[in-house]
Every structure is written in C-alpha cells, then in structure tokens.
Amino acid sequence: MSDIPHYNQAPRRRAEFIRPPNTLKAKAGSGGLSEEILIKAQALLENNAVDFQPLAELYMTAMQRAIDTARDGLKNGNDEQLISGILYPAMQLKANGGMFHYSLITRFADRMIQFLEVIETLDHDVLDIIDAFHSTMRAIVMGKITGDGGRYGDELIEALNEACMRYFEKSTGAPKPIDYTYLNRNEDVPAEE
Amino acid sequence: MTYQLETVSVLVVEDNKPMLDIAKSLLLTFGVGHVITATNGEMGFEKFCEYNPDLVIADWMMRPMDGISFTRLVRNDPRSPNQYVPIILMTGFSERRRVLQARDAGVTEFLVKPFNARDLYKRLAQVIERPRQFVRSDDFFGPDRRRRRSAEAGDYTGPLRREADLGNADIRQRFIDQRQEAHDTLRTIREKAGLSAGDKFPLSVEDIDFQ
Image (cartoon, each protein chain N blue to C red):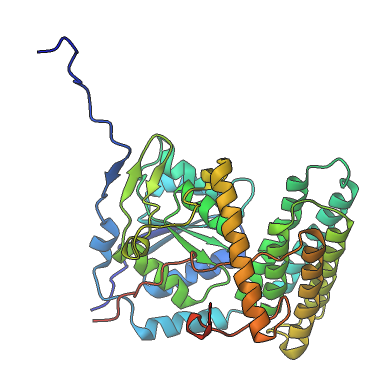
C-alpha cells in the first residue's frame, strides 16, 4: 500500500440537478383550455376600450426629455445610461401600443429599439435618426392613428429603416443579421381532451 | 376534460396599469382562481412572500425594480417562499443578448409583447406541461438553461452558451466570426434574390441554394 492518502472527500459535481414537484400541474390537471375560452379571451383583448393616447403622450414626452439629455451629454455622458433613458419609453410604446390598438406605434418602436440595441456610441447622426423616429411616432399618437397604418405605414417604416441601414453601412460597413429562432419554444401545447 | 385553474394563484407584476388590468382579465377568463397584482418588482416580491403564488408573470422594464432583479430575488433571496416557482417574463425585447440575460437571471419562459390570448395560453401550458428541472452550481441557480430541442438536434456547435462567455476573448471572436459569416450568407441571398439591404424576403430555408 502506498503512503499517498486516499481521495476521501465529497464527489465534485459540476452542478446539482433538482426536479421540483410540479404543483401547478397537480392543481391544473390536464386537457388544456377549450377553444371557446381562448376565443372569449381574445375578444376581450381586442375589444378593450383603454384609451392609449394619453399614456402614449407621456411616454413620448419622456422620450423627448431623454433625447434632449442625450444631446446635452454627448461629449461627456455615459452612453449606456443615455441610451437606456431613451430605451425605456420606447419599450413601453412597443409593448403596449399593439395591446391597445396602436400596432403602427409598436412597429416603429420595435425598429427604434433594434436600432438602439446595436449602436455602439451616441453621436449626432444617431440622435437625428432617433429624433426622426420620435417625430413620426408623435405624429401617429397625436393623430390617433390606430391599426397598422396600411401602405402609408409601410412607406414610413421603410424610410426610417433605410436611414438606419445607411447609418450602419457608414459606421460599420454592414448591417447585422438577426436570428429569432432562439426566442420561444414552439412545442405543441395540449389540446382539449 | 380541460384545465381546472380555480385553485391556481398567479402573481402579475407590471407597472403599466392598463396592461396589468388586461393580463389579469385574461387570466380570470382562463379560469385562474386568484390573481394577485403588483406594480413593480419590489412590491411584487413582497406580494410573492405574502401569497406564495403558483406562477409569476412579470414585466421586464419596471421602475424602481425591474423584472430581472425581481427574478433574482425570487430565486436567491432567503425570504423567498418558493425558489422554484415558474416565472414568465413579459417583454418587448427580442434581441438575443437580452434573452440570454433573462435566462441567466432564472426566468422560466418568455412572453414577447404585444401578445394575444393564445400566446399567453401557450406559455401557461408550457410551464404546466413541461416544467424545467433546476440547476444549482457555484454561479447559477435557476431553471435548466438547456433547451430539450437542442439536445435532440445533437451537440450545440455555436460559440455562445452563456452571457458570461462574451468575456472570453476567443469565444467572443468566434461569435463575431459566426455573425460575419451569417451576414455574408444573408448578403448572398439578397444578391441572388435581387433585393437591397433592409428588404424583407419571404423565403424558407428550402428555397435557398447555398452552393
């Protein structure tokens, strides 16, 4: 026998795996929800009478303030902090516009967020594009333009999109592709039994 | 036979009042028996400790405490009555790094806003029917971050597995290279289809000749 001591110690696992009890399943049972309930819920969503305009105006004002702050802080401000000031109202507009019949606002805010998420630094060119997004969304809110805006909406989106692409091509040489497949699991949900 | 949700309790944390009301109404229409509401992460955690709900649905962007900080509290704070509770994060973010950030905080599922009734139902059914196992390691506690679909497809070959991986220069470079490669592929597709930058192209993978 060697004098080398035995490796007598707890196993070194990289991670512990735990399978907690599925209390939710125990309570809910099985079978999913009926189509009738889903239709009723969707109707509730589509027929909600919330007036989004006053709320949207608050977010537009907050965004304008954040843009002004960003312009003032261009030289010595913290870019990440300045961008997040603009991002917050943009996110609220994107997330809530479509829930309350302003889907065109959601489309614009979505493009604006995508732009804010990929720019590396703030400069006057960036803020000019952000200003253009802000002005367009403000016009939509003030004009109470609900729905997707049709062909006119598409053209406006396209114009702003081209401005963003020109910026990317000028600053980085190439737009970045986006892969959405990581987002949600698309496994089947249970059907009614 | 359908779900019987009358004994299920759900905590909804959302700072936008109309949105909070809508989410609550949808859950009540689904038959959820008890919907608890809170308007920010701080209040949400207090309600969570008080009611110990079966499920949490939280918004990401809230002030003063956002949905990510709230999730970390639920998963790691000693006061948390149930570290394993499923958390569905509602957000307008869809960028990959944001999804990784939320996943690394311990979020169970994502619900991208704006959503419809069926989207909410799908996430609900997901946490009921396919609960995630939990992982505890030196630097993480939360739902297993590996997707079952990835395992079925074989070993993942991409460079980025964790948000923290971006701190590694080699992995970061591989990530940048892969992104550049994807961009080149996209440009090739655009050129073949006669499209300019920014144009949408209604193509499926089967339509594309990569040779």
